[in-house]
Length: 479
Image 1 (cartoon, rainbow, N blue to C red):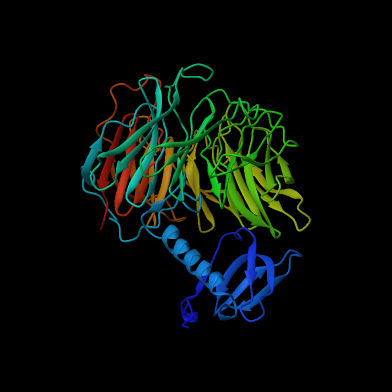
Image 2: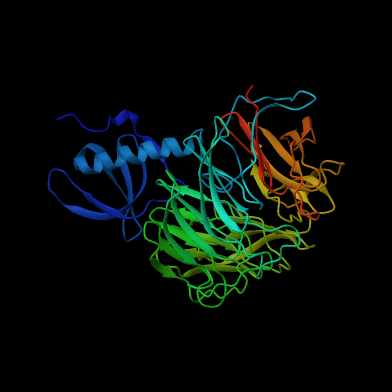
């Protein structure tokens, strides 16, 4: 019988170990519980329960194990390649598109517009894209609606209401509607509305599979502008942060919505707005979450707190943290600033540096190499050194004062929140290098007078996506 996997084809690794499973030796039938770390040179690297790393020949495993490895390799290839953006800030939560070969400069009027979709509803939700379908959230009438759009044509595939937007219980002075971005995993879509409703839907037709509520079910506590984190799917579980004093973080079975564990010792108060990250530090798979008064690492297996570092956030703590190895970068607006944390071998968190170079309100920060790029209040678009925290350069122009950022093919896509002007900037620590600029059109005539263009830009498969409330606009940026 031919082996399922040709040895030479196996060379892939993962940002964090997959969930433990039972492995069987073909010749003896002996089994062992272990986590898959990587497959390289025809050998499987497994993390054993005692923490040791063992190796076994692929061909020595059962056919079932070999088939499993084939499916994982296929998944790793598809999820990391072009065409897949299953969650807020992408499959690696870094805000960097996998695209290459894009336009290096834009025409005077901007890249060619491909289509406009005007049914996204009200709100500031971003978009996830899987297998040629885009998923986003918006309030239509008084229904919070998950919308699925064909990326080739801009035509609506389906729309499914998951809750009512009463516009009560959260601040709508800057505009109402959901702020969270849906997450797509294994044919299911996960969405959170501003008031705490959580829904799992079929990605195929939008049928609701199950629902939960962050307040009703977990005694969660929303921030002033409602629940805004985007759901994290990790393996079989959905990870959420209801906040409050009963279950600061919870893991749900993504298929059924049943509780797997909850972190009762975590009592953060307001849920705040930053999205949870998954990583591994010191051999412990964990979830990193930024709250108003602390940033924490929570163990993936049982929800225990692994480490915590204090933070003096205020009003609204929004940007998603950035993790690189055992270092974590966080930033907040309202004059707070940023800091870099290092987790020691004993899982103790210590500050590497802290300053007010990057005071990022909500547009996000992206790490490229040893530098960070994003908008800092009062400084405009800046480049910051990761190791020292020092500002390398800044550009405080009419269209680079404040907004959101995205990275694709060596360029920064910087969206000005005030008027929807998008600027293409070559990524370089050597200074600001503008390569193109145009204004989003159309923009919503129905936007709240205080509202701005806050949905982050996204580039995938040569297409640029921008949104202003009910208008979702697609452009061709292929080189």
